[in-house]
Image (cartoon, rainbow, N blue to C red; front, side, top):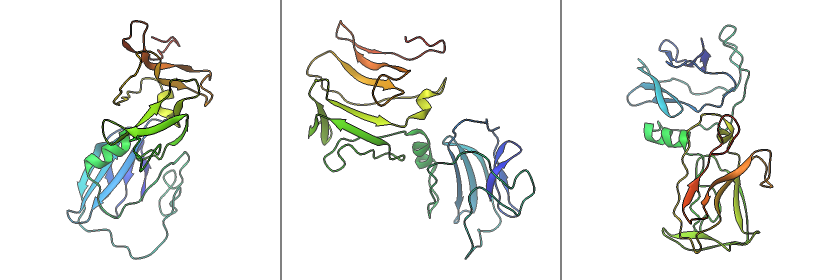
Length: 224
């Protein structure tokens, strides 16, 4: 069984249980991964893409049938039997993923290649929803690229980046550009799909002197 026990992640494995080292905070989204390598019999817990605990089991998991249950385990005592909270984007893989794979899944929010095969689809692990208007896919720096016309109706929008609304969260935005004019907004952030929500500002763009500038929202609500 997999749960939290004594405020830490817990990988139940019969007589070879493994507990993580980090205390889990309440009411915050965190990425977790539990991996068992049947060849080496090694158990690993990952928290936010980083190893949080590791041990070796004496035996492989022996199981040929049964139910896969999420949110409860009646075989353990209170308060470890029932889960209260959110779970999202759960996946089960039939192999042991590497630490590099798990780090990418935990930290890559979205990846837009803008290639003709995938067009505006997110090729990252989260399948982020997107919309676009008055854009086209043309030859780019690597394969294809997205072209904006420079009009008020030309844009590409992706939504669901909840971590950008959490204080003191690190993030990176990486892309190639080939500007036809040195003006305008490159990345705009808004709490509303209309672009003018209660929180909205240009994250990246061109200043009046044609230099690229970046802005972030500070703890006191100012943009700088």
